[in-house]
Image 1 (cartoon, rainbow, N blue to C red):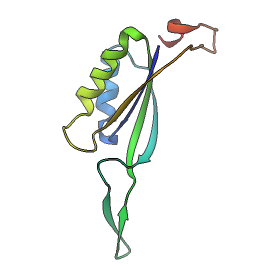
Image 2: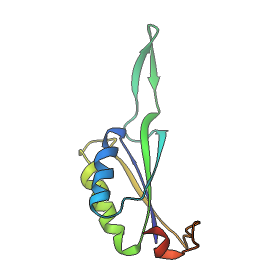
Image 3: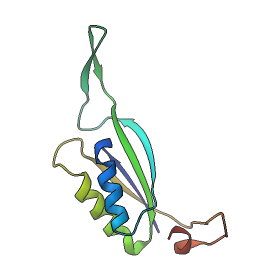
Length: 113
């Protein structure tokens, strides 16, 4: 099993969610986050004063998928999040050793279906 974390623009969340649902991977956790990367930030005018905003608002999508579904999950996120611009986001993949469904104690791939 793998844990896929994608940090993307909030405007891309709905398209990614629909894509993952169509690919039969509807389970995800979404967390609003702020961060800085290659995009560098922007400036905002607040009460007549220009303030540099270094941290950009993004969303982090977390999916735990079977090894067989890993590439399909990454492809769906890439298709729906990429505009070809700086600031489109990043995808990180981690190894997951086990998953347990609390309701009935199912473990492994059965717990993430």
